[in-house]
Image (cartoon, rainbow, N blue to C red; front, side):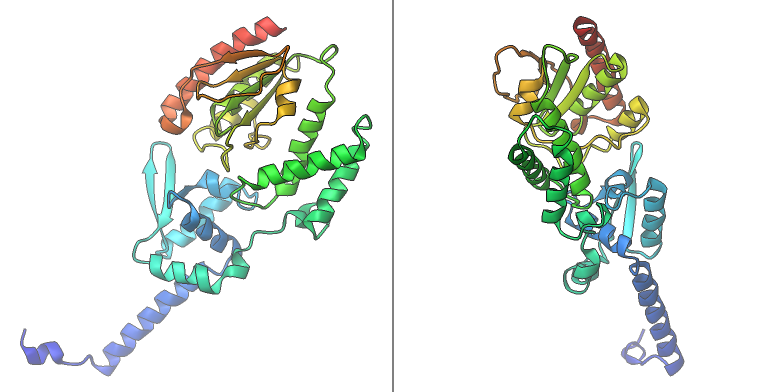
Length: 325
């Protein structure tokens, strides 16, 4: 091609067609980002240390179903914002490399309000302030635990919120999670060893895999004859994606499962404390039996490997429940 040909300008019609195509592309992309949930999902993917997320991760963003998340991800993928990669049983989504600079600019400069997660209290008794919500929560729990002073109940509620907030990646619904965690801690504080059913505490570092599976298996096998808890010395922000479907298969729902920090009252309330072979150190309480189970880490295993870990735990749990009941 000659230099003259290289320098020849586009015809007005061609330039207009290119401009219209570019405008249509930009309009389609902006339309795909017009939904606040999609923006929040995109922000979660961008801020994830791995640079990617799967449907299970994003379903926690606004307490929506996985099919809903999949629909929004497809819209973003069709618009060229996201790319996907299937690995094993899961599809992982990341921001397209060519779109990343523009998306980063959008997230950092133009969408801070849209990206803000709903306040915890929006769905919690209609309250619009976290402090007010925690005060209300403490008051409601005082009547359930009259043997504890109001100050003690309030302290547990606020400590529980702070403990969960330190690790929560998605802050929406943190107050309802605090209610469940605080209620569990208050139950542990008031437990009567002489009359209560045996209680087991499973401890691992992240409380996102092994300990969650073990506790669910105990509660399934014991049918109320043994109470199982789980906690983490350094809890993760969410249950491991490979573990979630197994928890759902055990008890029909994984909604009750979320990583929780290890507390002294959980150890004191337990008859048996089981660490999961990951080097955790628990407070030594007289009268508490301690065991260490050397089992694999789901975070380092394939989906099939996680199923094998579950089967190993099921055999151990069967023996433990038989001993306790």
